Image (cartoon, rainbow, N blue to C red; front, side, top):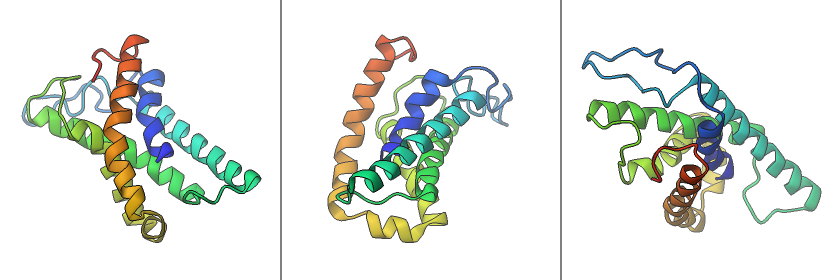
Length: 166
């Protein structure tokens, strides 16, 4: 899951600039995504996730690490891209519900990246997903994702890249 976990943090650090929605509003009068979703953040986040995934592929090959799922270029690209697409969909839905940027939305805030990543894998590399998503790994993802999300957001808040610690 590291290629999916890294993009959101990387997007926060590397983001800024032109918003993906160009400041436009939806038919309900609310922003489509908001100022927090930028092209620079999206691209930087995806590239960061893919690079980490490529390091994992190299390490697995160089050190014979076959304890974990064996990534491919496609799997790490789908995990990284899916994570940020899941975040975009969540942001779109948050705006429709009248939630402001940074406002907490429990469960959706923690699992958007998982849902987005798995949906892209299911669509474009279902074999990899079905071969590698075992029950123990699924349990680990369900348990660890909110914990890691909270820790990373607190760190992001204290180093100044997030406005709120959630």
